[in-house]
Length: 350
Image (cartoon, rainbow, N blue to C red):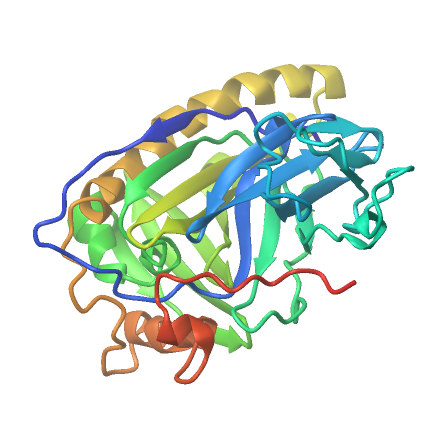
């Protein structure tokens, strides 16, 4: 399946008070770009939890993520670095590193062969490029879920860079009260949240513009939301992806995507389906997903984050989610908790 078209937007807003980050950087999988942005030979620099990460795609199509600075003399690989086959080449002295981070340039200076560029674990998932973060430097302890996209359109999405905290995004689906107040959705009937380690899910039955639908909201760590929507009355199924990443203490990027299928379209010839889905995908994204998220973004970008993230009491979906979310933040005694603005790399062991 082809990767989604991408648009980028930056939303600037000033906080109501002189704030510091209410939470340390979380652990887990986080989307740093859309797959379509990372073409073969491309080198991208992206901010990630207080520092730069360089992404590149090798000639064979492998997506890689590395520390931005060459271990030789500290040149930034995102400024002048290039891809040569399966290697990324530093612009300063042309030292080249393979996907495993090992230097493999012939004729290097004494000791240079031992240089290793720090690399990150990468997963491509439904049009997004995810990297792994762990404050203790641990390798991935869980994986993103398999998603059956059979018969669905290619995802269509965009990116926003916002003021605030990325936990806004995954907790949004468990704040049922805001659906009626902010989005004017009706007759919300939630089922009990189901927790499975780094995953939490909840089914919600609701109505929108007099159309009844059922939604399964799945959250996989704090960086990945995958929700399934079914509107039987019009034969529509949709998958909405929402992926957030903290790029600085009070700055985060939000990427979305929507894929869908209509039961009545399944009988049409495949070439005609692709044409119709391509047109409807852009239309649904613009008329359904974007207006809803913009209402949320208005609140997220302008709220007071003093004391944000403290779990509340009770057994409703929102406090249950908040307590579940605490597992992804460094606890007392861990480096990320002691230095909130610091970044401890979760690099691949060599």
